Image (cartoon, rainbow, N blue to C red):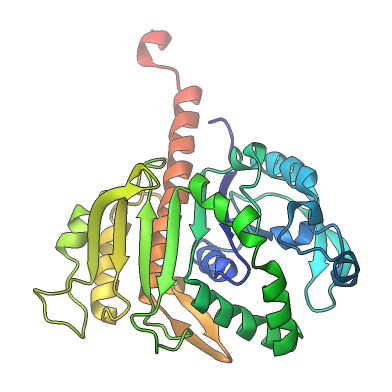
Length: 329
């Protein structure tokens, strides 16, 4: 516990929402305190080389896994790295960046939990698991508007990856402390709508906050009468044979109720937590900024783990600096 860098890993398939989750946490904690790094920068080959070699960026052989292991370890120890830079606009590499770690490090990407050495570097591990149909819509929209691909190119790329993600990406779910799934309340819902529901699987590998008071104040969605559908629901169950809490957050929760729920959750944060809750849940939909309260609540629960770890490290450091009174006497 004699370290100052706290690391969060966010894994998931392409266009699963990793950057959106990370961006809100960065803005809430402050860019001066958080460094976010995408694993895409550790590709071995540029876009043209991958095409010629018939390789997918999802494959470990297409990425510098050993360098990621080394850089994750250095960052955890508070040491700087020279990070490669992959440019999604050009499909090629730019000059590397010199990165000095801040208090919090977020590593998001396709393969951050691929090896045991990588997994050991994280204080909290989150896996994003949207329904495949929704993820495909997100990927088409992102790659055609931000990365210069045509719809035909994106569809062809996804067809070539269908057997790769189950082999290399999906298995990382079993190493996560929290599994997050955003999903529409019905099949006809706009995937960019801020009313997506959220389902969180909270594994006992981390000390998640006691949500009893949250659920007592959970209230109800705007659309359904109070006795039938509370805005937040918690069930105990098992996930892949392990005990887990299943937290459901209704996308139709009204803003006033969502803000109340966020206030209750914040009461579980350490006293010295410094978090701008107004930046949580925000995302871009085209040129418009929208806010999703299920996203905000999810980011707040993730930020809780980072702030709790920071508080534990600070307390351990204080105990090491200040000897017990009997030792002084």
